[in-house]
Amino acid sequence: MSSKLDDFLTPAQVCQVLKVTPNQVRQLIQDGWLEVARTRNYKYGAMELFYQHQVCALRSDMPKIRRGWESLVNHRLGASKAAAAREANRHVAVALKRRKEQFLESLAELSERTGNTLRVCFFLYHLNHYAKNGHTYLYELKEQVLRKLWTEYCPQELLNVTFVQGGPRVRLCPGCRFLARQQKKSHIEYLRTNGGCPKCTRDEQYYSLYEFTVAYGEYRFCFHIPYSVARKWLTNSADIPIKESALEREGFYVYGRSIFEPEAMAFEMLEVVQEIEQFLLL
Image (cartoon, rainbow, N blue to C red; front, side):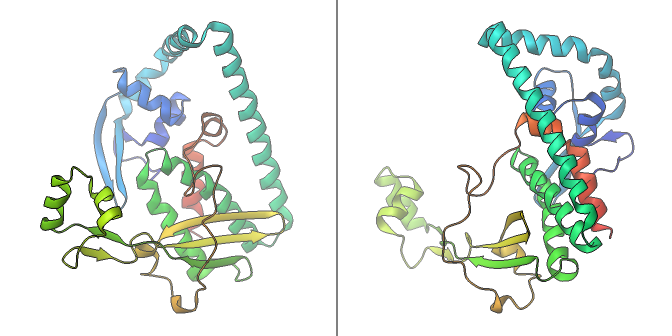
């Protein structure tokens, strides 16, 4: 996903060339500075591609564009508050970069396989945040990493997989949809009160997940993948235990969160993607 396609650049490459974050790329598109040249379809979504010549030509305009962005934020928050917020983001980004360096240095004393497993989990954690930020095509890389960890790479003692039972997805039949309209209820509201009928279709495992936990010493990473995806390559899935406790949360988010701006500054999108792709080549 990080490779160049003819004369086009990926979002990750645009971020590197212009020294911006994905959210700022969206702002450039919205403001008319960047044009989406085409899209490239992946399993979990489409990736936007940009003209290389247009991106490179935009580098000389970035100082002016940044000043315009700062002016708008200054107007909205006030100059002093806006400056304080920018400085706070910068300090957080510096601290995160230092933490990344310390983490990667700490892997040097581990075995190659254990070190590589923890390293890819570290970058997969941030890839998941980028995917939550709207770059859903990155979930394909996430699936490939988890599949590789399970099937051929991760030391058995590091990886624990559990099945998290979710509720079914119910699609209302035409009759129930008609009744929902009559009662002025949404489909979800109708299901909560009426539950549907035998003619409604049910996908019993639609909201079920597999939870992958990699733990070693003080390090612990947790990832989730839909049942419908992982069941195709999870061998001996009947032996995988069912998790009875609630799903783990990251902050207030059950399934993870979007990347924060200081994180996008500290863990550049292209670096994250390239680290993942390098692991997949091992």
